[in-house]
Length: 553
Image (cartoon, rainbow, N blue to C red; front, side, top):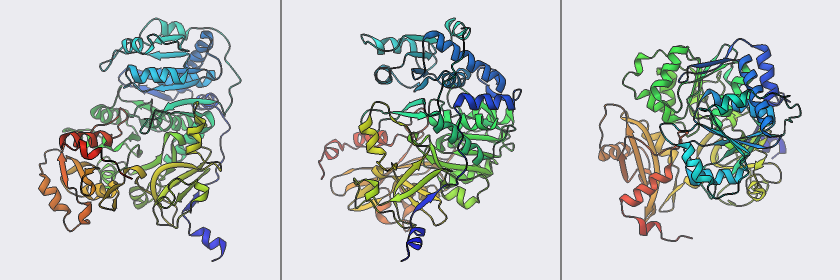
């Protein structure tokens, strides 16, 4: 076979060669503020506060001066421990102007997790609220830092006189921030081992935001409702940097996700775009007064952050009038988005795939099962249509894990390819279909079962509102399939009814042996479903502790 023909059949794609911006976050904010000084930049509805782009740029300068007055210098780390608020975005922009690396601290952290982050990040200053409905942050911080010799020198509370005094510092702004400086450090959820601090540069997030804005076709006329957490990449890159690149307005509906506040923000602000993970859209549809909110103003938006059920996306397109809704795929280590459907793509592409490679990004599907631990360069690039590991290369790759070169080398190979750990298939048109996580595969009696496939089938049941499929240990088969199902409002169903629906429709070994009807799923603050907690619950509830401890090869 000729070389060119052979390459053309391989699961490899390179995104368009669009220009990369050579700007820092601060430079980009200056540019947008000069273009659209009087247009709305951010509205925090729960705080009743609004800033124009010129106002946001001025506030960022005030933060930068305040940081320099504290002795925070280029490259120092500054922690931000807060739910969504206007101060979050001001700090994000201000740290970038000052050349400091913003460390995102999850508001769900308690003393043990905070202690780890304070120690590992070596943050010099921490900005936070005293308390909210969910936690007493001052008390948690006191316990976390007790007896430790930390780099932390300053703690500034937004709800105290320290904050306005901080903003009133005088002095010159720094002018030597570089594009490859670390702008943001985000701690991964630590599904294996301890959390790792992902270091993202100005170059990473400025350009990811640029290409996102292009994919959404954003202009300064757009208004984006952002109910996802700002401490997460979804919020502080997709939610913020796409707006800073385009001049679109950021609308924050609430401190944390609230379905009614989100729809009210769309309705009141006449928003053109809305973001969310699948569970957020499910919650919005589940409101008894959903139909009272006018969402006809919506044009586009994103469903991402977790596997996106086809049937749910169709509902958003039709019932929320979000006709140009897109799906994106990525992870924190890739800034985060590496594939995305375009607002102008066909319905088939936007419903059935996560789109194609973003500009300046390479994607390939590498063989997994035969050589799971081999370096990517030694593993076969599979033909179109075959499932393997999704691998990524390009500008969006993180600078590395903070203080962990060995961990970085395990993920990013010598030739620049990053192993995502996700399973996917590339179509001939270059679009990617994500089939699950490599570690999520259920092996039942030697048969490989991919939870995503079973979930997609169960979503076709007219009573199913949301479904999650997991594997639990079984003494005879190794693992069996369990489905947790949240029904649509007003619906009732039994385990037997769900199992009967599967008979003759999917292979016998994929049919859930147990179905649990639930009202909610365990999830992180960012809305990601925690399947490991579901598995732990099932093991405990079914008395499978001894079976779960059985050693396997």
